[in-house]
Image (cartoon, rainbow, N blue to C red; front, side, top):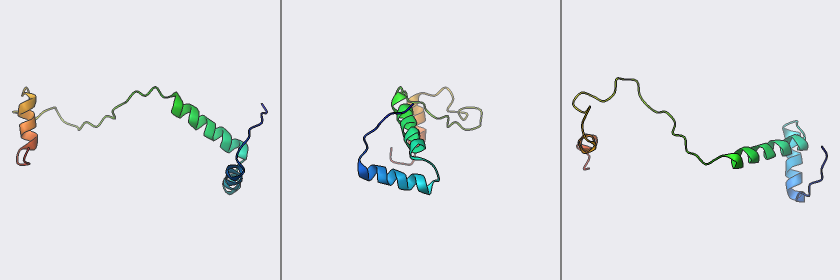
Length: 81
């Protein structure tokens, strides 16, 4: 589909140089940019925590079943916490 877009001269000049350097077209760069905007703004804002667990069998003996206070004391032991 054809459409007309009014773009600042400086921006268009920069896009043309980039298109030439990357051996692509201004159209391809505009489409790429619009796709990125759609993806970015289409995000729901939900946070997904990356899995960062370690191999093993859970908590060390003596800690398993402990309270948070006990675990926190062990974490900060010797660190002024």
